[in-house]
Image (cartoon, rainbow, N blue to C red; front, side, top):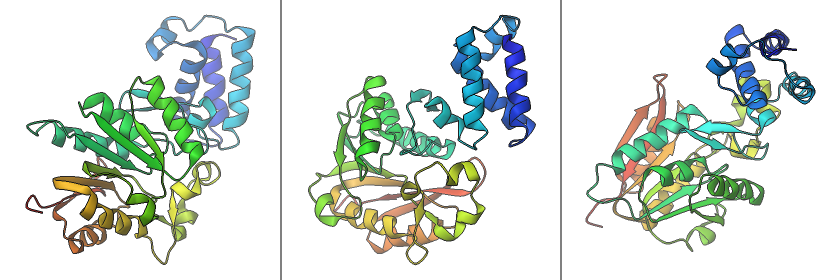
Length: 289
């Protein structure tokens, strides 16, 4: 089987689950992983025969993909802010919207007279946020917390693989006693769980069956519980003029802004993502506190 034949076979197989464009995008990722060749390189070498081992890999990946398993979990990798990350089923797959959140923080930080001295990521998962920030900012201390020891082990590996030092801590973001042991920060960032359980029916099968529900869903009766905890924590653990950045559900912008303002945080801004949906909120601790 040649490179081009394997690509066509894979896209044909995936048509039963995905449209043409998504099938080809997934097949591209798989073929790059198997051959080590980028798309243009594969075009130039399209008649190259795959080895027996590579053909077996195509078959194995096809089997897993037909079970609705996300391609990132199949390949055990995802790209975020130009960096490669290990992803397995107990960490969320990094999303483009979260890249926009990271980009907002970096652009703001680079306008400051000096780099932020300390940053905290709450609910770090794969570690994609703190690793990307550490790569871009000359911040000496970046701390990342998560309730999952399994997630932290993946995050630590991702930090090592990308040659950055992050302080990873096993901390429950809803446990005030644990949070209070942390120092103060110039920036607090979080992409917390924010999807109400009632929205599960609208989620795709590959998300519902494979991604960790604790990192996605919140109870219908209190869908903003993480933002309440973050806002309270920020009032005592942000330096004066420090900022908090969070990713949000598109319908939660005004509610999250209100939570921050009621805690005394100021200059609250709701920012849209590239799809035009409310997706991020930034708030600031007053400089005179």
